[in-house]
Image (cartoon, rainbow, N blue to C red; front, side, top):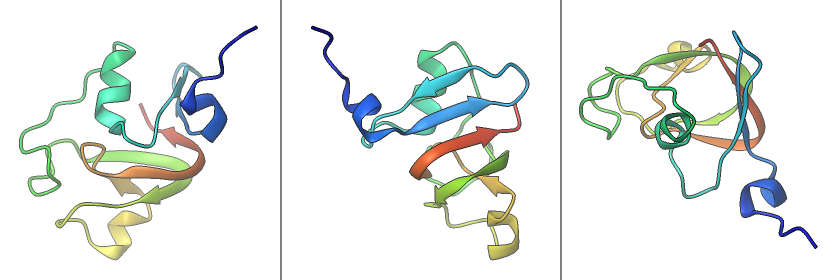
Length: 95
């Protein structure tokens, strides 16, 4: 019998647009950590949504933004993966 991980049961997934790679994410894991676990490094500095070093474009997905620097307009296209989370489903990153 296969054990279903919490990521599988929640269905939170990061998809890397350039490669099609899909990475399961748990609710308590940052996008930065999930990417790093899969060998994808994004530069960071503050890791609290204050500096913008990790600002990343996303193609689609429902994002819970946690930063203090991006405008509402920027939130339509960018996220800070150090502090933002996926609300539901799949987040496609422009990586």
